[in-house]
Length: 93
Image 1 (cartoon, helix red, strand yellow):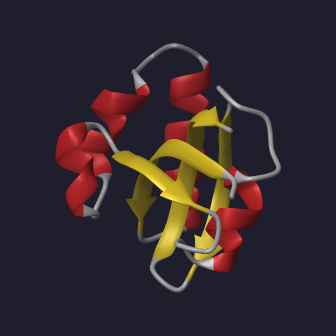
Image 2 (cartoon, helix red, strand yellow; image 1 turned 180 degrees about the horizontal axis):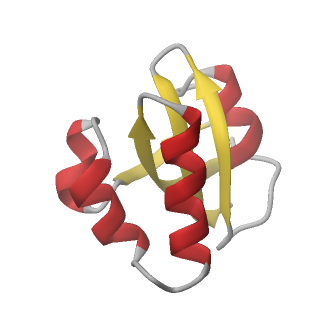
């Protein structure tokens, strides 16, 4: 079974999600710091770290990115029932 580790930032709107992605990609703020300051998910206090999980354990929109897209790149905005996410896949096997 495929497994992955990822971190994410969850916010309520797409505009903020895009703004944070631009700042992270420009090196203005680290992903972990952006998560601590902006994420509405409890994982934000840990820099957005979600740990390791298997395929199918997260919502489908999340799984699609984590198990198919490039590792080490900030992806998103990804909209789910919870809001808008920025995702960074840290490891996949």
